[in-house]
Length: 207
Length: 207
DNA sequence: CGCATTTCTGCGGTCAGTGCAGGCTTGCAG
DNA sequence: CTGCAAGCCTGCACTGACCGCAGAAATGCG
Image (cartoon, rainbow over all chains, first blue to last red; front, side, top):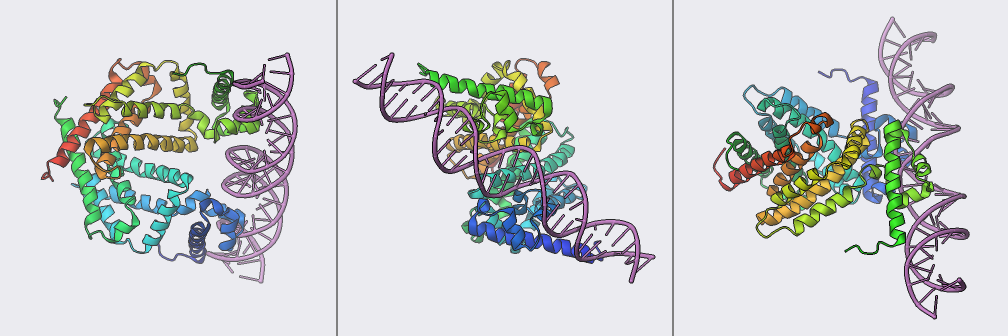
Protein backbone atom coordinates (compact mmCIF):
# COMPACT_ATOMS: atom_id res chain seq x y z
CA UNK A 1 0.00 0.00 0.00
CA UNK A 2 2.19 2.79 1.23
CA UNK A 3 5.35 1.46 -0.37
CA UNK A 4 8.45 3.61 -0.59
CA UNK A 5 7.62 6.37 1.86
CA UNK A 6 10.31 8.60 0.36
CA UNK A 7 12.72 10.74 2.29
CA UNK A 8 10.52 13.77 2.14
CA UNK A 9 7.46 12.17 3.65
CA UNK A 10 9.48 10.32 6.24
CA UNK A 11 11.03 13.55 7.40
CA UNK A 12 7.68 15.23 7.51
CA UNK A 13 6.13 12.51 9.56
CA UNK A 14 9.09 12.58 11.88
CA UNK A 15 8.86 16.32 12.33
CA UNK A 16 5.20 16.01 13.08
CA UNK A 17 5.83 13.41 15.71
CA UNK A 18 8.57 15.52 17.24
CA UNK A 19 6.23 18.46 17.50
CA UNK A 20 3.59 16.38 19.22
CA UNK A 21 6.00 14.73 21.61
CA UNK A 22 7.76 17.92 22.63
CA UNK A 23 4.54 19.86 22.85
CA UNK A 24 2.92 17.33 25.16
CA UNK A 25 5.95 17.36 27.43
CA UNK A 26 5.85 21.13 27.64
CA UNK A 27 2.10 21.13 28.20
CA UNK A 28 2.45 18.76 31.09
CA UNK A 29 5.20 20.86 32.61
CA UNK A 30 3.62 24.27 32.30
CA UNK A 31 0.02 23.71 31.26
CA UNK A 32 -1.49 24.31 27.84
CA UNK A 33 -1.77 28.05 28.27
CA UNK A 34 1.70 28.29 29.75
CA UNK A 35 3.28 27.17 26.50
CA UNK A 36 3.42 29.30 23.37
CA UNK A 37 3.67 28.10 19.82
CA UNK A 38 7.12 29.67 19.80
CA UNK A 39 8.10 27.43 22.72
CA UNK A 40 6.92 24.33 20.91
CA UNK A 41 8.71 25.35 17.74
CA UNK A 42 11.93 25.89 19.66
CA UNK A 43 11.64 22.49 21.33
CA UNK A 44 10.99 20.81 17.99
CA UNK A 45 13.74 22.69 16.15
CA UNK A 46 11.52 24.38 13.65
CA UNK A 47 10.64 27.98 12.95
CA UNK A 48 7.51 29.27 14.65
CA UNK A 49 5.97 29.89 11.29
CA UNK A 50 6.52 26.28 10.30
CA UNK A 51 4.40 25.02 13.15
CA UNK A 52 1.33 26.14 11.29
CA UNK A 53 2.33 24.10 8.28
CA UNK A 54 1.76 21.05 10.46
CA UNK A 55 -1.17 22.03 12.66
CA UNK A 56 -3.83 24.64 12.00
CA UNK A 57 -4.11 25.57 15.69
CA UNK A 58 -2.25 24.96 18.90
CA UNK A 59 -5.18 22.90 20.15
CA UNK A 60 -4.88 20.48 17.26
CA UNK A 61 -1.52 19.22 18.51
CA UNK A 62 -3.29 17.66 21.45
CA UNK A 63 -5.63 15.80 19.11
CA UNK A 64 -2.97 14.94 16.55
CA UNK A 65 -4.20 11.39 16.10
CA UNK A 66 -7.84 12.27 15.71
CA UNK A 67 -7.91 12.48 11.95
CA UNK A 68 -6.28 9.10 11.59
CA UNK A 69 -8.60 7.63 14.16
CA UNK A 70 -11.67 9.01 12.47
CA UNK A 71 -10.49 7.77 9.10
CA UNK A 72 -9.99 4.35 10.63
CA UNK A 73 -13.53 4.16 11.91
CA UNK A 74 -14.89 5.58 8.70
CA UNK A 75 -13.04 2.96 6.70
CA UNK A 76 -14.23 0.24 8.99
CA UNK A 77 -17.81 1.32 8.57
CA UNK A 78 -17.52 1.47 4.84
CA UNK A 79 -15.99 -1.97 4.50
CA UNK A 80 -18.08 -3.79 7.01
CA UNK A 81 -19.51 -7.23 6.20
CA UNK A 82 -22.89 -7.34 4.58
CA UNK A 83 -24.98 -8.35 7.55
CA UNK A 84 -23.18 -6.21 10.13
CA UNK A 85 -24.77 -3.19 11.72
CA UNK A 86 -22.97 0.13 11.93
CA UNK A 87 -23.15 -0.21 15.67
CA UNK A 88 -21.68 -3.69 15.53
CA UNK A 89 -18.86 -2.39 13.38
CA UNK A 90 -18.31 0.34 15.93
CA UNK A 91 -18.13 -2.31 18.59
CA UNK A 92 -15.46 -4.25 16.70
CA UNK A 93 -13.50 -1.12 16.04
CA UNK A 94 -13.62 -0.15 19.69
CA UNK A 95 -12.48 -3.62 20.69
CA UNK A 96 -9.40 -3.20 18.50
CA UNK A 97 -8.75 0.24 19.90
CA UNK A 98 -8.80 -1.15 23.40
CA UNK A 99 -6.45 -3.96 22.41
CA UNK A 100 -3.70 -1.68 21.17
CA UNK A 101 -4.09 0.59 24.15
CA UNK A 102 -0.57 0.53 25.54
CA UNK A 103 1.67 3.08 23.92
CA UNK A 104 -1.17 5.50 23.55
CA UNK A 105 -1.90 5.18 27.21
CA UNK A 106 0.52 7.88 28.32
CA UNK A 107 -0.65 10.26 25.67
CA UNK A 108 -4.25 9.53 26.51
CA UNK A 109 -3.70 10.25 30.18
CA UNK A 110 -1.90 13.46 29.34
CA UNK A 111 -4.71 14.53 27.05
CA UNK A 112 -7.25 13.92 29.76
CA UNK A 113 -5.39 15.87 32.40
CA UNK A 114 -4.93 18.75 29.98
CA UNK A 115 -8.61 18.80 29.13
CA UNK A 116 -9.52 18.87 32.77
CA UNK A 117 -7.99 22.27 33.36
CA UNK A 118 -8.11 23.83 29.92
CA UNK A 119 -11.64 24.63 28.77
CA UNK A 120 -10.65 25.35 25.20
CA UNK A 121 -9.35 21.81 24.92
CA UNK A 122 -12.53 20.32 26.31
CA UNK A 123 -14.42 22.31 23.72
CA UNK A 124 -12.11 21.13 20.99
CA UNK A 125 -12.71 17.59 22.04
CA UNK A 126 -16.43 18.05 21.60
CA UNK A 127 -15.83 19.35 18.11
CA UNK A 128 -13.76 16.31 17.26
CA UNK A 129 -16.37 14.02 18.76
CA UNK A 130 -19.03 15.60 16.62
CA UNK A 131 -17.14 14.36 13.58
CA UNK A 132 -17.46 10.84 14.92
CA UNK A 133 -21.12 11.56 15.46
CA UNK A 134 -21.57 12.49 11.84
CA UNK A 135 -19.84 9.38 10.55
CA UNK A 136 -21.87 7.18 12.85
CA UNK A 137 -25.07 8.90 11.92
CA UNK A 138 -24.45 8.38 8.25
CA UNK A 139 -23.94 4.69 8.79
CA UNK A 140 -26.89 4.33 11.11
CA UNK A 141 -29.12 6.24 8.77
CA UNK A 142 -28.29 3.79 6.01
CA UNK A 143 -28.96 0.89 8.35
CA UNK A 144 -32.34 2.21 9.36
CA UNK A 145 -33.15 3.48 5.91
CA UNK A 146 -33.63 6.96 7.31
CA UNK A 147 -32.34 10.35 6.23
CA UNK A 148 -29.14 11.53 7.89
CA UNK A 149 -31.08 14.42 9.39
CA UNK A 150 -33.82 12.20 10.75
CA UNK A 151 -34.43 11.80 14.42
CA UNK A 152 -33.71 8.11 14.84
CA UNK A 153 -30.16 8.16 13.53
CA UNK A 154 -29.52 11.18 15.73
CA UNK A 155 -30.79 9.45 18.82
CA UNK A 156 -28.87 6.28 18.17
CA UNK A 157 -25.64 8.01 17.23
CA UNK A 158 -25.86 10.32 20.21
CA UNK A 159 -26.28 7.44 22.59
CA UNK A 160 -23.48 5.46 20.98
CA UNK A 161 -21.23 8.46 21.21
CA UNK A 162 -22.19 8.95 24.83
CA UNK A 163 -20.99 5.43 25.50
CA UNK A 164 -17.74 6.18 23.70
CA UNK A 165 -17.19 9.32 25.69
CA UNK A 166 -18.08 7.51 28.85
CA UNK A 167 -15.29 5.06 28.16
CA UNK A 168 -13.02 7.97 27.45
CA UNK A 169 -13.71 9.56 30.76
CA UNK A 170 -13.08 6.61 32.98
CA UNK A 171 -10.54 7.72 35.55
CA UNK A 172 -7.01 6.59 34.79
CA UNK A 173 -6.76 4.80 38.12
CA UNK A 174 -9.68 2.61 37.19
CA UNK A 175 -8.32 1.73 33.80
CA UNK A 176 -5.68 -0.66 35.03
CA UNK A 177 -8.04 -2.48 37.29
CA UNK A 178 -10.50 -3.21 34.54
CA UNK A 179 -10.94 -6.75 33.34
CA UNK A 180 -9.84 -7.37 29.76
CA UNK A 181 -13.30 -7.35 28.29
CA UNK A 182 -14.66 -4.69 30.59
CA UNK A 183 -14.60 -1.67 28.28
CA UNK A 184 -16.58 -3.48 25.68
CA UNK A 185 -19.26 -4.18 28.22
CA UNK A 186 -19.94 -0.49 28.45
CA UNK A 187 -20.63 -0.40 24.77
CA UNK A 188 -22.76 -3.50 25.09
CA UNK A 189 -24.91 -1.85 27.70
CA UNK A 190 -25.30 1.07 25.35
CA UNK A 191 -26.13 -1.36 22.60
CA UNK A 192 -28.88 -2.90 24.65
CA UNK A 193 -30.19 0.57 25.36
CA UNK A 194 -30.21 1.43 21.69
CA UNK A 195 -32.00 -1.71 20.65
CA UNK A 196 -34.57 -1.25 23.36
CA UNK A 197 -35.13 2.32 22.26
CA UNK A 198 -35.50 1.42 18.63
CA UNK A 199 -37.87 -1.41 19.42
CA UNK A 200 -40.03 0.99 21.38
CA UNK A 201 -40.15 3.32 18.39
CA UNK A 202 -41.19 0.54 16.06
CA UNK A 203 -43.89 -0.61 18.45
CA UNK A 204 -46.00 2.52 18.88
CA UNK A 205 -48.50 2.59 21.66
CA UNK A 206 -46.51 3.10 24.86
CA UNK A 207 -47.71 6.68 25.26
CA UNK B 1 -38.84 39.80 42.76
CA UNK B 2 -36.59 41.96 40.71
CA UNK B 3 -38.00 45.22 42.06
CA UNK B 4 -36.29 48.54 41.43
CA UNK B 5 -33.85 47.60 38.71
CA UNK B 6 -31.82 50.74 39.43
CA UNK B 7 -30.49 53.09 36.82
CA UNK B 8 -27.13 51.43 36.74
CA UNK B 9 -28.40 47.97 35.97
CA UNK B 10 -30.92 49.24 33.48
CA UNK B 11 -28.17 50.99 31.58
CA UNK B 12 -26.02 47.94 31.66
CA UNK B 13 -28.74 45.69 30.34
CA UNK B 14 -29.45 48.19 27.62
CA UNK B 15 -25.84 48.38 26.58
CA UNK B 16 -25.68 44.64 26.45
CA UNK B 17 -28.72 44.45 24.24
CA UNK B 18 -27.33 47.12 21.98
CA UNK B 19 -24.12 45.19 21.57
CA UNK B 20 -25.98 42.04 20.65
CA UNK B 21 -28.33 43.78 18.25
CA UNK B 22 -25.65 45.71 16.43
CA UNK B 23 -23.27 42.77 16.38
CA UNK B 24 -25.83 40.47 14.80
CA UNK B 25 -26.62 43.04 12.14
CA UNK B 26 -22.95 43.39 11.29
CA UNK B 27 -22.45 39.63 11.31
CA UNK B 28 -25.26 39.16 8.84
CA UNK B 29 -23.84 41.85 6.60
CA UNK B 30 -20.22 40.82 6.55
CA UNK B 31 -20.05 37.42 8.22
CA UNK B 32 -18.73 36.62 11.66
CA UNK B 33 -15.09 36.77 10.65
CA UNK B 34 -15.61 39.92 8.66
CA UNK B 35 -16.49 41.89 11.76
CA UNK B 36 -13.97 42.87 14.40
CA UNK B 37 -14.65 43.58 18.02
CA UNK B 38 -13.67 47.15 17.27
CA UNK B 39 -16.44 47.30 14.67
CA UNK B 40 -19.00 46.04 17.13
CA UNK B 41 -17.83 48.48 19.78
CA UNK B 42 -18.09 51.35 17.32
CA UNK B 43 -21.60 50.31 16.32
CA UNK B 44 -22.65 50.04 19.96
CA UNK B 45 -21.00 53.30 21.01
CA UNK B 46 -18.64 51.81 23.50
CA UNK B 47 -14.89 51.56 23.72
CA UNK B 48 -13.38 48.38 22.30
CA UNK B 49 -12.03 47.57 25.72
CA UNK B 50 -15.49 47.79 27.19
CA UNK B 51 -16.80 45.05 24.94
CA UNK B 52 -14.93 42.53 27.04
CA UNK B 53 -16.63 43.74 30.17
CA UNK B 54 -19.85 42.40 28.67
CA UNK B 55 -18.75 39.31 26.78
CA UNK B 56 -15.67 37.19 27.36
CA UNK B 57 -15.29 36.37 23.66
CA UNK B 58 -16.66 37.53 20.35
CA UNK B 59 -18.39 34.18 19.94
CA UNK B 60 -20.36 34.66 23.12
CA UNK B 61 -22.32 37.54 21.63
CA UNK B 62 -23.99 35.10 19.30
CA UNK B 63 -25.09 32.99 22.25
CA UNK B 64 -25.96 35.91 24.47
CA UNK B 65 -29.17 34.32 25.71
CA UNK B 66 -27.65 30.98 26.51
CA UNK B 67 -26.86 31.60 30.13
CA UNK B 68 -30.37 32.79 30.83
CA UNK B 69 -31.82 29.88 28.94
CA UNK B 70 -29.72 27.38 30.81
CA UNK B 71 -30.60 28.96 34.13
CA UNK B 72 -34.25 28.70 33.17
CA UNK B 73 -34.06 25.00 32.52
CA UNK B 74 -31.97 24.44 35.58
CA UNK B 75 -34.51 26.25 37.70
CA UNK B 76 -37.30 24.29 36.15
CA UNK B 77 -35.62 21.02 36.90
CA UNK B 78 -34.95 22.00 40.47
CA UNK B 79 -38.50 23.09 41.16
CA UNK B 80 -40.33 20.34 39.39
CA UNK B 81 -43.33 18.65 41.00
CA UNK B 82 -42.61 15.61 43.11
CA UNK B 83 -43.71 12.91 40.69
CA UNK B 84 -42.30 14.51 37.56
CA UNK B 85 -39.35 13.09 35.70
CA UNK B 86 -36.45 15.26 34.63
CA UNK B 87 -37.31 14.38 31.09
CA UNK B 88 -40.92 15.37 31.62
CA UNK B 89 -39.78 18.68 33.05
CA UNK B 90 -37.60 19.12 29.99
CA UNK B 91 -40.63 18.45 27.87
CA UNK B 92 -42.66 21.13 29.63
CA UNK B 93 -39.83 23.58 29.41
CA UNK B 94 -39.44 22.95 25.72
CA UNK B 95 -43.13 23.42 25.19
CA UNK B 96 -42.88 26.85 26.77
CA UNK B 97 -39.86 27.72 24.68
CA UNK B 98 -41.74 26.86 21.54
CA UNK B 99 -44.73 28.94 22.67
CA UNK B 100 -42.77 32.16 23.03
CA UNK B 101 -40.97 31.56 19.78
CA UNK B 102 -41.80 34.76 17.92
CA UNK B 103 -39.40 37.57 18.68
CA UNK B 104 -36.53 35.19 19.04
CA UNK B 105 -37.26 33.80 15.64
CA UNK B 106 -35.17 36.30 13.73
CA UNK B 107 -32.25 35.95 16.06
CA UNK B 108 -32.50 32.19 15.90
CA UNK B 109 -32.46 32.19 12.13
CA UNK B 110 -29.49 34.51 12.13
CA UNK B 111 -27.66 32.31 14.58
CA UNK B 112 -28.23 29.28 12.43
CA UNK B 113 -27.01 30.90 9.25
CA UNK B 114 -23.93 32.14 11.03
CA UNK B 115 -23.16 28.71 12.42
CA UNK B 116 -23.50 27.21 8.99
CA UNK B 117 -20.50 29.03 7.62
CA UNK B 118 -18.45 29.72 10.71
CA UNK B 119 -16.93 26.58 12.22
CA UNK B 120 -15.86 28.28 15.42
CA UNK B 121 -19.49 29.13 16.12
CA UNK B 122 -20.64 25.59 15.51
CA UNK B 123 -18.00 24.46 17.97
CA UNK B 124 -19.11 27.04 20.46
CA UNK B 125 -22.64 25.80 20.16
CA UNK B 126 -21.52 22.32 21.07
CA UNK B 127 -19.81 23.69 24.13
CA UNK B 128 -22.98 25.46 25.20
CA UNK B 129 -25.04 22.36 24.54
CA UNK B 130 -22.74 20.35 26.74
CA UNK B 131 -23.77 22.56 29.63
CA UNK B 132 -27.35 21.53 28.99
CA UNK B 133 -26.14 17.98 28.89
CA UNK B 134 -24.60 18.31 32.30
CA UNK B 135 -27.72 19.80 33.85
CA UNK B 136 -29.89 17.12 32.32
CA UNK B 137 -27.55 14.39 33.40
CA UNK B 138 -27.59 15.59 36.97
CA UNK B 139 -31.36 15.49 37.02
CA UNK B 140 -31.58 12.16 35.29
CA UNK B 141 -28.98 10.65 37.57
CA UNK B 142 -31.11 11.62 40.54
CA UNK B 143 -34.18 10.16 38.88
CA UNK B 144 -32.48 6.86 38.18
CA UNK B 145 -30.63 6.87 41.44
CA UNK B 146 -27.34 6.62 39.54
CA UNK B 147 -24.09 8.52 39.81
CA UNK B 148 -23.70 11.50 37.50
CA UNK B 149 -20.81 9.74 35.81
CA UNK B 150 -22.71 6.53 35.30
CA UNK B 151 -23.58 5.22 31.89
CA UNK B 152 -27.36 5.34 32.02
CA UNK B 153 -27.66 9.04 32.74
CA UNK B 154 -25.16 9.68 29.98
CA UNK B 155 -27.12 7.66 27.48
CA UNK B 156 -30.43 9.22 28.37
CA UNK B 157 -29.12 12.77 28.49
CA UNK B 158 -27.29 12.34 25.21
CA UNK B 159 -30.40 11.11 23.47
CA UNK B 160 -32.54 13.86 24.97
CA UNK B 161 -30.02 16.41 23.86
CA UNK B 162 -29.94 14.91 20.41
CA UNK B 163 -33.67 15.47 20.21
CA UNK B 164 -33.20 19.07 21.32
CA UNK B 165 -30.53 19.68 18.75
CA UNK B 166 -32.62 18.01 16.14
CA UNK B 167 -35.35 20.52 16.81
CA UNK B 168 -32.80 23.25 16.64
CA UNK B 169 -31.62 22.19 13.24
CA UNK B 170 -34.94 22.01 11.51
CA UNK B 171 -34.65 24.14 8.42
CA UNK B 172 -36.20 27.56 8.81
CA UNK B 173 -38.48 27.02 5.85
CA UNK B 174 -40.04 24.06 7.57
CA UNK B 175 -40.62 25.88 10.83
CA UNK B 176 -43.53 27.94 9.62
CA UNK B 177 -45.31 24.99 8.11
CA UNK B 178 -45.19 22.99 11.31
CA UNK B 179 -48.37 22.28 13.17
CA UNK B 180 -48.62 23.91 16.60
CA UNK B 181 -47.80 20.80 18.58
CA UNK B 182 -45.36 19.41 16.07
CA UNK B 183 -42.08 20.29 17.78
CA UNK B 184 -43.12 18.57 20.94
CA UNK B 185 -43.75 15.42 18.99
CA UNK B 186 -40.07 15.21 18.22
CA UNK B 187 -39.32 15.19 21.90
CA UNK B 188 -42.04 12.65 22.45
CA UNK B 189 -40.47 10.31 19.96
CA UNK B 190 -37.20 10.74 21.78
CA UNK B 191 -39.04 10.09 25.02
CA UNK B 192 -40.38 6.84 23.72
CA UNK B 193 -36.92 5.90 22.60
CA UNK B 194 -35.51 6.64 26.03
CA UNK B 195 -38.12 4.67 27.86
CA UNK B 196 -37.64 1.73 25.55
CA UNK B 197 -33.92 1.86 26.07
CA UNK B 198 -34.19 2.05 29.82
CA UNK B 199 -36.68 -0.79 29.92
CA UNK B 200 -34.27 -2.91 27.93
CA UNK B 201 -31.54 -2.19 30.43
CA UNK B 202 -33.71 -3.14 33.34
CA UNK B 203 -34.75 -6.35 31.66
CA UNK B 204 -31.44 -8.04 30.96
CA UNK B 205 -31.39 -10.93 28.57
CA UNK B 206 -32.00 -9.46 25.16
CA UNK B 207 -29.01 -9.61 22.88
C1' DC C 1 25.27 18.28 -11.88
C1' DG C 2 21.11 21.36 -12.92
C1' DC C 3 16.30 22.11 -12.80
C1' DA C 4 11.45 21.76 -10.91
C1' DT C 5 8.91 21.11 -6.89
C1' DT C 6 8.14 21.33 -2.38
C1' DT C 7 9.17 22.89 2.17
C1' DC C 8 11.05 26.07 5.59
C1' DT C 9 11.77 30.46 7.26
C1' DG C 10 11.55 35.45 8.39
C1' DC C 11 8.94 39.57 8.00
C1' DG C 12 5.17 42.31 8.67
C1' DG C 13 0.69 42.55 9.81
C1' DT C 14 -4.23 41.70 11.90
C1' DC C 15 -6.94 40.81 15.60
C1' DA C 16 -8.60 38.66 20.08
C1' DG C 17 -8.04 39.12 24.65
C1' DT C 18 -5.86 41.05 29.24
C1' DG C 19 -3.84 43.90 33.19
C1' DC C 20 -3.49 48.31 34.75
C1' DA C 21 -4.28 52.95 36.01
C1' DG C 22 -6.87 57.01 35.65
C1' DG C 23 -11.24 59.39 34.58
C1' DC C 24 -16.30 59.45 34.81
C1' DT C 25 -21.03 58.03 36.69
C1' DT C 26 -24.00 56.48 39.92
C1' DG C 27 -25.70 55.54 44.54
C1' DC C 28 -26.03 57.05 48.88
C1' DA C 29 -25.49 59.60 53.22
C1' DG C 30 -25.33 63.63 55.37
C1' DC D 1 -27.27 69.56 46.92
C1' DT D 2 -22.90 68.09 48.10
C1' DG D 3 -19.33 65.18 48.80
C1' DC D 4 -17.61 60.56 49.15
C1' DA D 5 -17.24 55.57 48.00
C1' DA D 6 -18.08 52.08 44.77
C1' DG D 7 -18.44 50.58 40.39
C1' DC D 8 -18.10 51.45 35.37
C1' DC D 9 -15.80 53.03 31.17
C1' DT D 10 -11.79 54.06 28.68
C1' DG D 11 -7.05 54.29 26.72
C1' DC D 12 -2.61 52.26 26.72
C1' DA D 13 0.51 48.91 26.23
C1' DC D 14 1.24 44.25 25.72
C1' DT D 15 1.04 39.12 24.69
C1' DG D 16 0.19 35.59 21.59
C1' DA D 17 -2.32 33.07 17.79
C1' DC D 18 -2.51 33.01 13.12
C1' DC D 19 -1.90 34.41 8.03
C1' DG D 20 0.05 36.10 3.33
C1' DC D 21 4.00 36.61 1.03
C1' DA D 22 8.45 36.17 -0.91
C1' DG D 23 12.92 34.41 -0.71
C1' DA D 24 16.15 30.73 0.93
C1' DA D 25 16.88 25.92 1.38
C1' DA D 26 16.12 21.15 0.77
C1' DT D 27 14.63 17.35 -2.06
C1' DG D 28 13.42 14.45 -6.22
C1' DC D 29 14.58 13.47 -10.75
C1' DG D 30 16.60 13.37 -15.16
